Image (tube, rainbow, N blue to C red; front, side, top):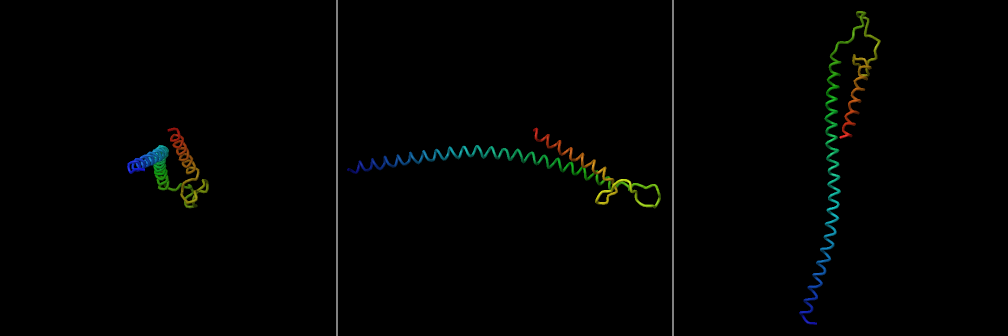
Length: 128
C-alpha cells in the first residue's frame, strides 16, 4: 500500500467520523430545543401564576387594611352604656375573645363579608 493510499484512507475515515459526530450533535441539539420549548412553557405558567398570586396578595392586603381600619374605628367607639348608671357593663351581646367592647355578631358579619370578597376575587382570577 502506498503512502498516497494510506493518506486517502485516513482522510476518508476522519470524514466519516466527523459526519457521525455531526449526526449525534444534531440529535442532541434537536432534543435540547424540544426541552427548551417545554421549559419556556413551564416558565410562562410560573410567571402567570406569580402575577395572579401577586394580585391576590395585593387584594388581601387591601382587604386586611380595610378590615383593620374598621376594627380600629370600632375599638375607638365608646363602650355601650347599660343605662343603669354604675351597675356595670351590659350583659346582652357577646363580647369577643380579645375583650373588645364590640359585639361578636358585628365581627362575624365583617368576617363573612371579608370571606365573600376573597371568594369573589378568587373566582374572578380563575376566570381571567
